[in-house]
Length: 168
Image 1 (cartoon, rainbow, N blue to C red):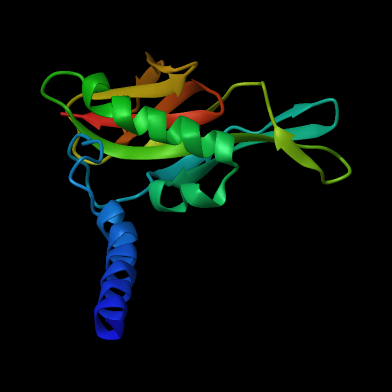
Image 2 (image 1 turned 120 degrees about the horizontal axis):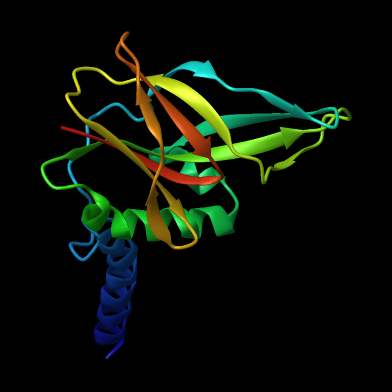
């Protein structure tokens, strides 16, 4: 009888360890559109605004670093990722998917989220067509993009939230 109990306990322990491992590679995880291996675009020019002595800048957070952000931002990123496939314009792939943190740093060095929008210029290689969308208030919204002659794009009105750069 003791052997049967020990065997049952060993089986329960083994199964309890297998459940978290299966959750990591779950086939029911939301599918996203095709992405490249580059986690973040190369930022060429970043707009820096000053407002009442505070500096406002945008910081890019790669998808594999999102778990280090506050839980509210993590939830927003997951919701954006679940809706990403439907947000992709027809015939385009997701070249970059990341979180943009628009931060305000006061004169006393305290940093908080900013409600002010900023723009930035990033390098996008070999793209005949570029569309940039940001996940705002639970939906993907297209941002204004200026395609520059030097192979870069300028993205305007970036606020705090996930961003996807789609290319064709």
